[in-house]
Amino acid sequence: MKEKLTCECTVIHEDVIKAVQTKLPKNDEISKVSDLFKVLGDKTRLKIISALLKAEMCVCDISCLLNMSQSLISHQLRVLRNARLVKFRRDGKVVYYSLNDEHIEIIVQYGLEHINESGEVDETN
Image 1: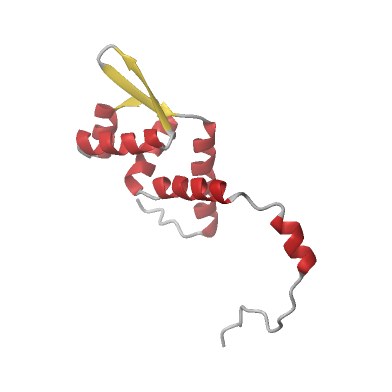
Image 2 (image 1 turned 45 degrees about the vertical axis):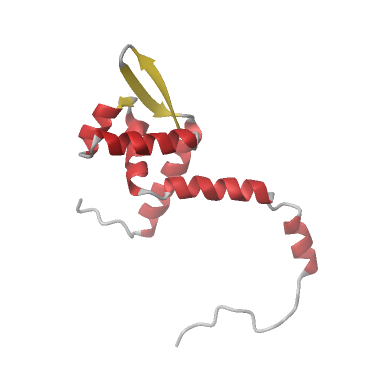
């Protein structure tokens, strides 16, 4: 028998509501965080970020590492750049990409830790 996961009463706890209401993020903040997670919700972009967690890389290197076309990698890097997740620097003819700041690493690391703790990861690949 399934456990019922809804309240069986209609009591509103106004003190809790008021306390939480003052601490909620603003709608604009919620919208921007939602957009951030949409960008991070793409497997290719997460693979690129994972690679950039390890080293600064150019499009050619990322393309070779992930076995994807340079145009696909360039497009995804543009999305990541527009979301302020990656930055670039030019060295002669080569453009190197890296993570914009340590927050991105923390977000990805926490996500990986969460998934690994749940036991849902297939460790055969």
